[in-house]
Image 1 (cartoon, rainbow, N blue to C red):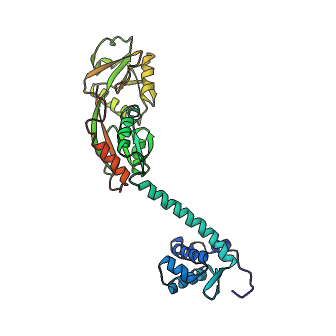
Image 2 (tube, rainbow, N blue to C red):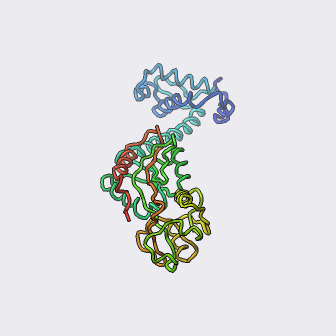
Image 3 (cartoon, one colour):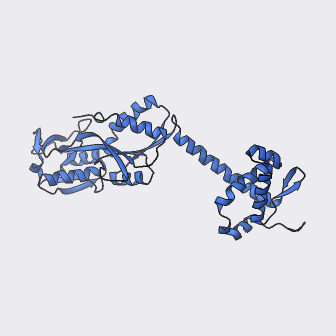
Length: 321
């Protein structure tokens, strides 16, 4: 560029070049340019970066050649930014600051003491089992952070495969999915819940076939408990007539208490007025609860610590009725 000739607006020049300047090629040179620009001295910048001064000089010169503008005005051992150089430095500083924030976030995510675990679990596990797990784990790892997600099993497993979740506590257990690793932890008995004034409310035990003609209330399709309930009814020789669908077990208990149907549900922690819970003797209405994670995906130290802790609770995960 001839002396005194106006320098082109750098953003416009970069936009013209577009894909001819892939970021992967420019990135190292931009960081090196920023070091020179901050110190206004090539030798000092080379020492800071731990590279030979001639190598750094060539790198900045190649960057100028690729952009087609002078970024630095050389004055002996020192340099000064041109107007184009100042424009570029402002953008590079913002980009480097964002990269540093990202790197710091990545380091924080994996910190063994203060890192984060993205943990998904069933709604029915959220009232007792999961709070107890978190309380006991935090006794040993008090600063580990958790992102807690409650959803139906299909959605959680999709988020697990996509890397949005680290671990999932689910039922049914996805034993046949090659993308996932799953370990069975416990079994939970499902009771038949009937209104308190139901003809069977005085019974302690029942065969599921005895309510084949009753209206059922259940979770929406896609929830693991709904699939399990449908499977038990099929095993008993009938297809349940679903009168109402919901998204949460305690809501279903309320519907049963209102006389709107019967339901297969995990035992209530606190007795619910208006309902009776009966043990089902045939079929054996128990669901397996397990922990799942993505196969072949590296896990951070806090995730590994929590996974090992949950696995150590095998057989002791739930309050047994």
